[in-house]
Image (cartoon, rainbow, N blue to C red):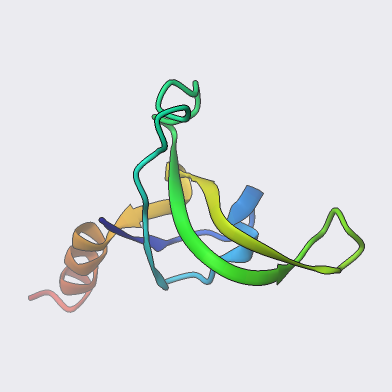
Length: 87
């Protein structure tokens, strides 16, 4: 499934770009029972980024959890774009 970032001002969305498409990944067996799994997507990130915890050092993040409130499915995003064009 693909999602689009709508807001990158909170939490782990600070690593994402607004209006960019991201792939989500299925939770691993141990993550499926996590209490936040229904409220978050796990984004397939696989890139180096600056760590805010490690004084700006680069770290490799394979995946990140982001709030569903800050994301929208690609299908919903496309429909919003069509609505803006009044198509």
